[in-house]
Amino acid sequence: MNTQVEVSASKTSPKSISVVIAFAGVVVSVTAGLFIAGMANTLQVLVVAFGVTAFLVTFARLEWGVAVMLFVLYTQAYIIVGERYGVTNVVQGLIMLLVLSMGTRWIVYNHEIPQGWMRPLFLVAFYCMVGLISVLYAVDPAVAYYIEVELLKSGIIALIIAVVLRNEKSFHLAIWVLLAVGIFLGTLSIFQFVTGTYSNDYGGYAVAALQNIAGQSDDYRLGGPLQDPNYYAQLMLVLVPLALDRLWNEKQSILRVLAAWAFIACTFTVLLTYSRGGFLSMMAVVIAMLAVFHRGQLRYLLVVLIVGLFLVNVLPSKFTERISTLTELIPSLSSSNGGVRDSSIRGRTSEAIVALQMFADYPILGVGLGNYPGLYQKYSQRLGIDARSEVRQAHSLYLEVAAETGLLGLFSFGLLLWVVLKSMWKAQRSLARAGLTSVSNMVAAYAFGFLGYLLAAIFIHSAYPRNFWVLAGIALSIPRMAEIELETAEEARRNRPFSIERSGISQNRK
Image (tube, rainbow, N blue to C red; front, side):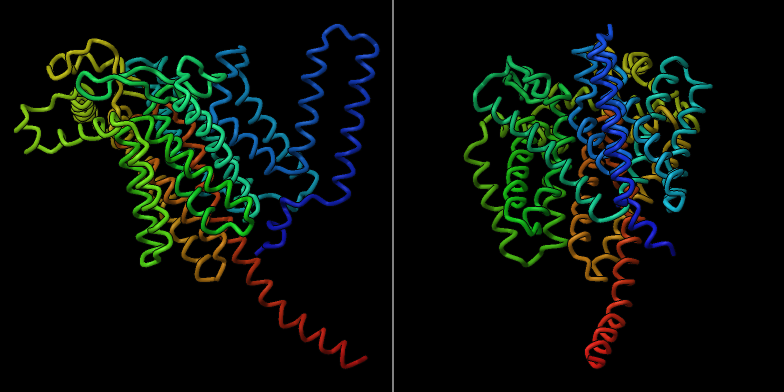
C-alpha cells in the first residue's frame, strides 16, 4: 500500500513552495511592467495575472482550490455573478483550473497519482451515460442535450472533489467551508427576517417572496440565493448535523462558538423558509443522529430541547399554520375536513401521478432528460386534478428520475446512492473501531447531512442538481480518505514500539 505517498500528496515540499513564490514574483513583475508600459486592455492583464496566481496557489495546495470551488458552488455565487455581471464561465474556469493544477502536480510529482478513483468514476460515468442515451430518444432532444451537458460538468466536479479530499485535514477543511456558507447565508436570512427588509436581496444572497402559507394566509418565505424556499431549506438542512457535530467535538473554543452560530443560523433559516419537506427532513436527521450516536447522553438531548423550546417561542404563528396543513395528507383527517384543500398539496399529487404515468408509458428509458415539464400538461389534462395550465415539474427527485430515465436511470442512480451510503457507513465504523473518533464523528455527521438532502428530495425535484453532485463528491471521497487515515494510524502504531526501543538503546549506550 502506498500510504506515505497518499498522505504526503497534499503537502508541498519547501522546494516547490520556493518555485511557487518565484513564479508569483515573475507574474507580479510582468504585470507591473505591462502597466508601466501602458498596455491598452488593463482588465485582460488583471484577469491573466489573477488566473496565473490562482493556478500557482492551487498547484501548491489543491485542497484550497477545492475549498474555493465548494464555497462558490454552495453559495450559488456562480449563478449570481452570471445573472448580475454576465460572467457565465465561472464553473468552467474552476474546473479547468483544478484539472490543470492536478495534472501539473502529477507530472511534477509523478509519485502523486491518486488512488481509489475508479469506483467514483464508474458510478458517475454510469449515470451520465444513461443521460447521454436519453438524448437519442427524448421527445425534445435539445432540452435533453442541455441537461446532459450540465450533468457532465457536475459529474466532473464530483470527481475532482473525490480525488482531492484525501485525508482528515482536507476533509475537515471542506466541512468548515460548508459551515462558513451556512453562517454567511443563514445570518443574512435571519437579519432580513428580523428587520423585515424583504425588498433588499443583499446582493442576490437573500431573496424572499410573498407566497401562500395556508388557506388565505400569505407571508414572506426566505429563498436565499436559490430564490426558492424549498430548495434553500434543502441546501441548509444538510449543514445542521455538521454544525451539531462540530459544536460537540471541536477542540478549539472559537470553532465551537462558530459551530453554534452555524447551527442556530441554519436551523432558523430552514424553519423560516416554511418548507414542510425541509422541516420534516431536518427533524428526522437530527433525531436519528441523536438516537444512533448519542442515546442516553443527557447533555445532547438538553441542547436540542433548549433550542426547541426557544424556537417555539420566537417562530411566527404562520409557521404552525403551514406545518398543520400536513394533516391533510392523512386520509382520515382530510376526508373528515372535505378532502385536500391546500392547493400546493393538490398540485403535487397531480405531479406525482403524472410522473408515475410517464414511467408506466416509458418504463425502460423514460421520456428523456428534462422532458417531464414539456409533457406535463398532456398528462395533467387527462387526469383532471390540477387546474393550473403552466409548465410543472415532478416535485420529487426520484419520480423525476423514473419518469425521465426509466428503469435504467433508477438503477444507475440507485446504485450510486447505495454505494455512497454504504461506503460512508463502513468507513465511519472502521474509523471508530480504530479509535480515530475525530474523523469518524465528522463522517457520521456528513452521512446524516447527506441523508437529509435525500429525504428532502422526496418532496422536490432536481432544479439545482449541482448541489447534489457537490455533496456526492465529498461523500465519494470518504472511503479512500478513511483508508489512508487507517493506514497512517496503523503505520504509526507499528513504528511506535520501534522508536521507544531505539530511544531506550540510545540511553543505555550513554
